[in-house]
Image 1 (cartoon, one colour):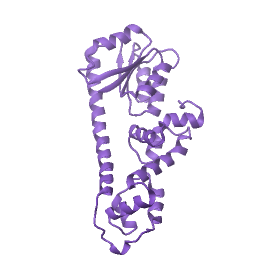
Image 2 (cartoon, rainbow, N blue to C red; image 1 turned 30 degrees about the vertical axis):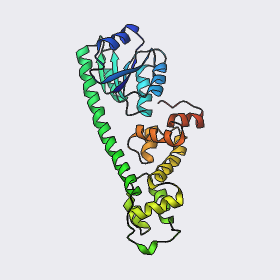
Image 3 (tube, one colour; image 1 turned 180 degrees about the vertical axis):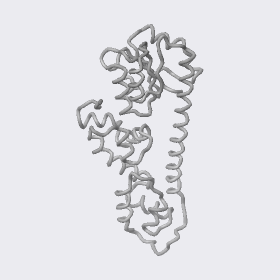
Image 4 (cartoon, rainbow, N blue to C red; image 1 turned 90 degrees about the horizontal axis):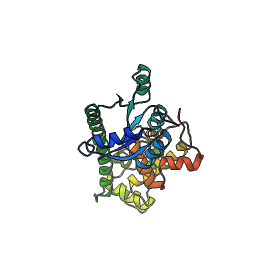
Length: 270
């Protein structure tokens, strides 16, 4: 199901959107609603929506400022603007902050359904690409755990020098690293390298690389000039949502929570 947050200061509009659109038929679920930009931001942080359906004119933080903050911190969230202002300037600003579409009030149900279908198709395509990346990482882990005969019997000994491997990982952690290349650095087969690497470090290769990336991410997250998706890219993750999931699994905090604890500030909006 695709998760949706609705933000509009008019109760009639919110109720109309909830009850006139066949959300379940579209594979969607309303996970939150808000009467202004501030509560909408809280809903987004708590409920991790795929789509934000928001008015432009709202008290507190308006829809444009909200969308800018969402785009900076959660770039995978698709944004649809609803507004009664048929002005070119608003359309320009909507495009500038990364809106996926712009619909005029009163909302035409057929038009909104068509937009939702197009956007959910885009999300599905992005998820397929993300799933493929995860499959590749899982394949690396699987290879690391397989029992393979060592091709280099000369290297059978209790202790191995992994300094070249450690140095390479420390310099190239943000790149796509092939297990075969790391094993070649220390003249081992993939299977034997994985067994000895885990014996020395207590972690398999993928766990070690993941932990290294998370440690590298921490000082970057403390730098408020960097957006979360920029940190994600700098430590080797194209999908910022997947990065956030891994970061939370390793550290116990989401990137946003970690940032708040270490800066005591809300994410900056430009």
